[in-house]
Image (tube, rainbow, N blue to C red):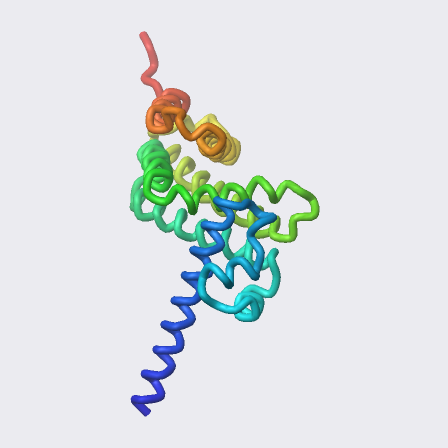
Amino acid sequence: MQSGRTQRRTQEERTALSDRRMLDAAVSLLVEAGMAGTTLAAIGERSGYSRGLVTHRFGSKAGLFAHVHDTVMADWIARVHEAVGAAVGLDALQRVVDALYGFIAEAPDEIRAMYLLRYASIDPSAEFRASVARAHLAQRRDVQRWIAAGQCDGGIDPSMDAAEVAELFCACVDGVIYRWLVTPDIPVRSLHELLKQQVDTALRVRAASG
């Protein structure tokens, strides 16, 4: 009985290892060769597994792209939630911006691969676009929740529409990443600091004058 449990754990570990290797191979190929050069066969060759195993695991190239996007997105969400913790309002948004810069600094290939897939999803024929749409919705809902909580505690202007502000915040974040992807030598750290300042200026409740 113990031997069976051990064998199952070993198989799970092997599956996790192969998933990780194939994901790493897909990310590196996306960064180096783009979507056209990221084939199931190339991923199998780079990761040390057969094309058949890659196909069995992900089904198709579209399924693989959805897996890459969703896995990197899950890592991003985990980073954000860890950074935000119990914070709400402006503090939460400032922490999101800091987490984003940390993601760029620590995992540049992963974020490049994720955003390559995100932007490619605007193609009507992109079969993985539903995964991107779900991620955008989840991202906006988190930000909206933090903004609404900030309005309740008096830190953010309550007259603002939390959903619209959340959408604009997410768009600004995506815009900074896009600029960095196209022009890697822009002062991305300074831009994130400026974004934090502008968020504070735009959303903070100001004391009445006079």
